[in-house]
Image (cartoon, rainbow, N blue to C red; front, side, top):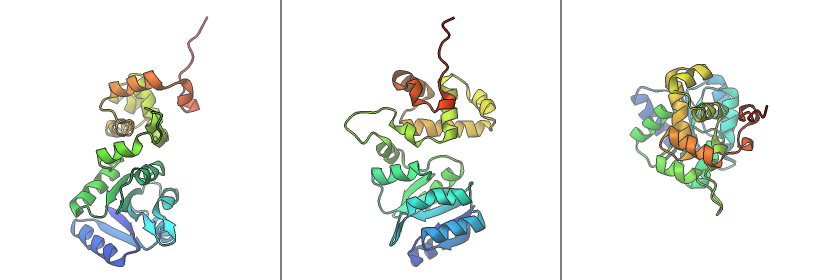
Length: 223
């Protein structure tokens, strides 16, 4: 895997570079601030970017969308000393594919990179559920929908319509493994354990207005 590492602590960058290179990865570039990371992503088109959260003059989360804008296939994994629910939720909402603490061992970081590269959300399930639960006193069981990508909305429509994984893959024009990945991300973001629970949750709480316009259910004919 070709990697970009962005952190303003030179010793940490060097240590990560050595450890990841020893595991067979290629560190294509390093950067000490988000602006340089965006330019490095544009030039090197890495498979993944390890991005620090805090910088003296910037916030790493603000660079996630910009990195995707110049290198669409780069998966961004946030490195942070904090895993507060607000920070994790904001990172995922901006398009991060992973979030891992700086104190985690290199094996955990390697696993997060592999998961992110597969298109799945590389966040500890307990942390993810806590991050995506409603922030207000009024319970909103569909809070996780705000973190859906356009493709996940399409996959959700397939699940609610009762399509099998094979039918979903055909409908979306993707491989079966990719359809499974979309379904897994949907379950994780909604905090449920099965597609039946997804369908039940949407049936109980969603309205036509819940869905993006192109995917709204058609009204029943009265003629």
